Length: 189
Image (cartoon, rainbow, N blue to C red; front, side, top):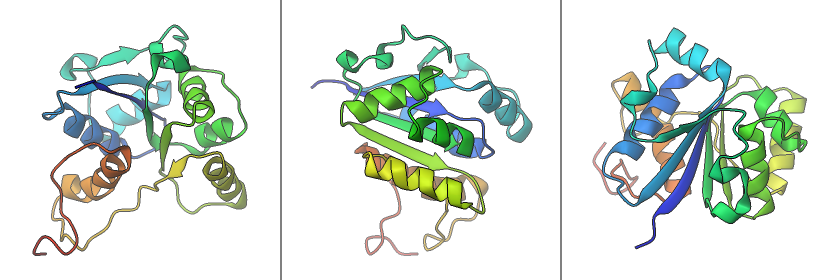
């Protein structure tokens, strides 16, 4: 079986718990995944403010510098099929929407869109202004999937991790990555 290639970009907005839970779930038993990670400078700052110290060595993934245009997913020929940006700031979302490929995150997103592959963006902002909404519309029209960091509660989550997982599990579903989760109509609440 071929390995599924996924790039995860962690943007600089608040919501590091979503990125942490995503990385945790990707690391749990998904042996058929190749995962490349790129983080903005603010992503690391926010992780440390919100969650504590960040250590790349804690994760079984390959990390790439935000300016490493030699990373495999900077080219469509590497055949990364999915990119997840979690969380995504409105500045990052706007740069992607307008084709500004000034770092590895925006270049990889541009590659995913031009190759007609799956780009999943998890914006973490509230409220949205008209510029945010228009940028999200433009990205949706270009083929991206906007999956806001809006938790659900019908599974009756009781911890912050469980609340964040209601978003992360949807992202994993959108990416076509198998995982165990609450399913409406299949689980008792």
